Amino acid sequence: MKNLDALMIFSRVAEMASFTRAAESLGTQKGRVSAVIRELEQEIGVALLHRTTRSVQLTEDGRLFYSRARDLLAEAEELKHLFAGQDTLLRGKLRVDMPTELARSMVVPALPQLLTKHPELELELSSTDRRVDLVQEGFDCVIRLGPVFDETLIARKLGKLRMVNVASPVYLRRYGVPQSIDDLINQGHQMVHYTRLFGSRLSGWEYPEGEGYSSLPLPGTMQVNSVQTYHEAGLAGIGLIQAGHWALKHHIERGSLVEILPHLRPSPLTVSLVVAHRRNLSHRVRAFTGWIETVIAPWLDR
Image (cartoon, rainbow, N blue to C red; front, side, top):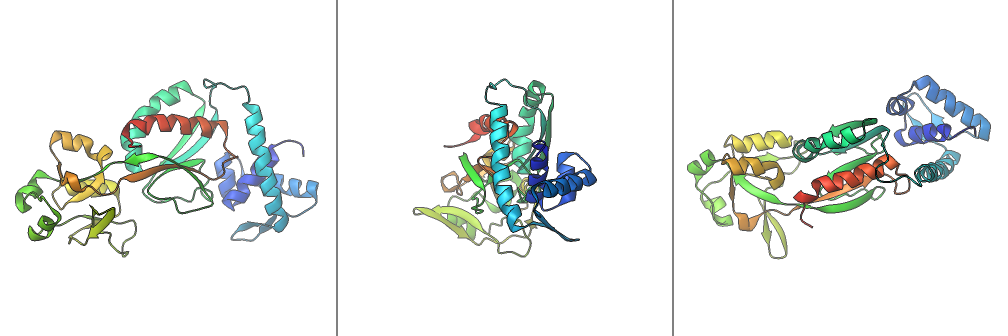
C-alpha cells in the first residue's frame, strides 16, 4: 500500500457504513473515497465491502482487514506523537457530542482557552439530548450522562453530577413547600415530566429509599423532551422538576428557583467519556479528553 491514507479512508467507510458520510467527515469528495477503496481492493486482491444502493457493509475479508487496519492506524498515530509533549499543537478535525446543558454551562465557556492555544484545531461540537450513534455518525468521542449500555463502546467514568429538586417561588406559594414524600401527595403537587420519547413510560418523581431509589407517580400537565424546555417549565411555575445542580445553580442563587426536599435528592448522574476503540485514539482525542476532564472536574462528586 502506498500510504496510510487508504487505510484511514477505508476504516471511516467501514465505521460509518456510507461513502457519502465518510467523505463528509473527512472533508473530501465521495468520488475520491470510492476511487481509493477500488484501488485498495485491487491492490490486495479481495472485495472488502458489499455495496448496495442503500447500504455499505463489510465482507468477511473486509471485517478481518478492518480489524488489522484499525490497529495499524492506532500504532501509526502513537508513533507519530511518540515524542510529543503536552504542549504539542493540535491540528485537524475533532468531532464531539455532549448533552446540550453540559455544553452550554460548562464546556463552551472554557473553549476559548483551548481554541486559542490550538488555533489549527477544527472542533465540531454537537450538543443534543439525543443519544447519538458514536460510530455511525462519525464522532471521535462523546460525553454521556447516565449508564452506558452498549458493550461495544469504551466508557470511562469521570464522576457523578449532583441532582436537585426545585420549584419556582410562584409554584410554592400556590401549593406549599413539601417537607416529605407524603406532602407531595397530600398538598396536591404536580411535576413536569421529562422524556426522551413521547408515549414511553414516565419515570415519576425519584427519591432515595433504603439503599436504593424509588419513584412516585406524581401527576403533571406537561411532558417535554428538551432539557432546556424542562428547566423553563420549572421556572414558569408549571410544576416541580428534578435536574442537575450545575445547570440550575445560577437560578437557585438568584432566587428564581428554590431547592426543596434537599434530604431526598434523586440519584446523581454518572458522567462518562465514551470512545469507540481504546487503541484507536488520535492525539487530538487523547488531548481533548484530558482537557475536558479538567474542565468538568470541579462540578463532579467522585
